[in-house]
Amino acid sequence: MNTGNLLLQAQNIHKTYTGKTEPVEVLTGADLEIHENDLTAIVGASGSGKSTLLHILGGLDRPDRGSIYFRNADLAQMNDEELAKFRNLNIGFVFQFHHLLPEFTALENVFMPGLIAGKPMNQIRDRAGYLLDQTGLSNRMDHRPSELSGGEQQRVAVARALMNEPEILMADEPTGNLDERNTEKLLSVLLEMKQKERTGIVLITHDHRIAEIAPNIYELKKGTLQPVTLQNS
Ligand SMILES: Nc1ncnc2c1ncn2[C@@H]1O[C@H](COP(=O)(O)OP(=O)(O)OP(=O)(O)O)[C@@H](O)[C@H]1O
Image (cartoon, rainbow, N blue to C red; front, side, top):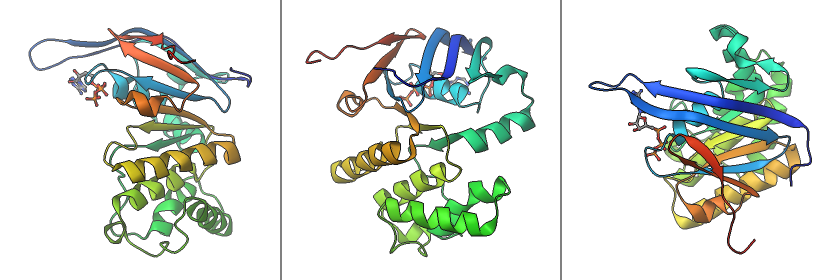
């Protein structure tokens, strides 16, 4: 199933939060390998640590123990500034709530990662226009987030996440706030963009039906990842 080169390798990831009264041990030795252009879903009960794991895999947080290599780069060796630059160039994030900047238009929101990366403005404009077109928003580019539906806002968030041509898109319950029709639309946009851009996707969901779009499914349970085999596969 995994034919591409190894892109991300997480080994023996541990994470415990200090907690108010007692420590919360969330990850107790999670291992994961992601290859180029993989689609991987991670399921697990509420509170099992899915978001914690995604944040660590994407370099938004650091593990207490364990290693994460992205190609040959060891995330533990990067200082915070290097890690921020690494994230902006290699990883796209989509969360349950879009986190778009309310005072900017859809087009300007999609610009942001390109501006932060210091790319030329003409390149940023072309790429943002292309991505909004691909996500079905060519006639909504000048709308502010408050002038977009929930499904449209989430598709802008996908376009923004793809701005810098990331190698992996990390999506944390991206459809958690959407109705069935918009869920289907968002998933089909993700799958289409995966094909067109050759982007790997890590999809966190508590919904097994959504996870089933992924060839590789893992369940996070008691702090570790176990492969899930579908009954009809
Ligand atoms: N900053 C923190 N400090 C203390 N405990 C935390 C912190 N962040 C998360 N937790 C706890 O760690 C556990 C895992 O949280 P996490 O958000 O990773 O789970 P999840 O599987 O994504 O949950 P959900 O599906 O409900 O979003 C939970 O018990 C949560 O209460």
